[in-house]
Image 1 (cartoon, rainbow over the protein chains, first blue to last red):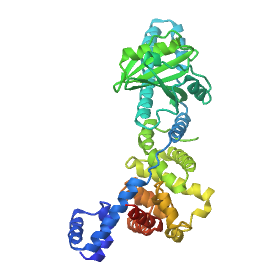
Image 2: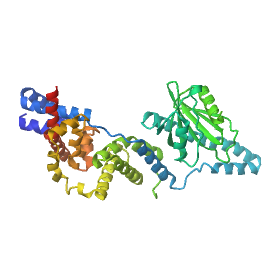
Image 3: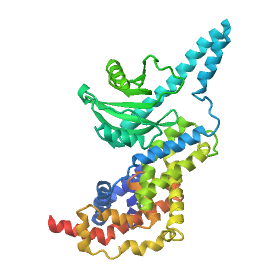
Length: 257
Length: 183
């Protein structure tokens, strides 16, 4: 290989785009040719500087939020396949029919639909949590002050979630963010517990959800998800904190005491 | 939006992981964070519209292609003067001679780690994009060719040209000398 050829291939060589045979040829040439070796070193130095000094602009939280909103809009544009609120009305209707077959169907139907709806919400909540903790979007408003977090959330939602700092109980409030649950923006409170992060999703209680719904617990991909109702809100907590601690914590939060 | 049904999970898997790359490319092409946000948003909406046509495979190259188009459309709409006809080679003169920056000023800027960024930002868009895709996204020549819609040979020649412009950039030379003087 001569200098002319080496010159033509030096960039591709540095970019790892040359096949092994060509790479070996150019390497042989570089050993014997000071000029070409210097050019290679210049290119390597430039690459090193670019990687060290040139910023990779990561997407800010707003980009992700807007992308998700656009996705929500696109997904819900065609007739939704399973409107979540409607299942209650037809479940009620089914119960009223009263005959044995309907009752049986009702039991089966309730179990399946409940399981499915809860399962969807649970997996959505877990996905939100992992996306937030893995990405750079855990907290939009960082504050341990409930009087900072609450108005920030209220300003961006059509409801005002109760916000409490539970530092005294070992759960300091770290901040809040806006997330999406069940196709709607949802207030998300971020708490710390020792080395763990807890996401709490809060939304107004749907009119037909029984106020005294028993706490539900689910585990998905190693994360515990706890559900509570209280203070006119529906609460979901997601974390890798153990389920008993998480249940107590959320009950405390939901009661607002 | 009147779109065909979008498979949410599939879209999340294909497109959401590319948002950083998308924003980075848009940011380098538009020179502005706010503009890049709008461009990525526009690209997401286009991606949702065309998602059914995406047959799987290289989601990053697919989405970055859309982002690139959205970036240039945005620039055309808002700052048409920046787009030189053809491949942007007309802007080379500006690139090799950054307007009015003296070596002293350049050395000062090095303190903020800015000189190289400015030299890259001053490259004509056709050269800037292949450099960013190669050095920051670490795409292969083949992927760059796909995203930038040019033959692989052109990818190679633009990369070589972009690098030599940077190496000859007065900004960077000033820095090198400045560093040598200090070191």
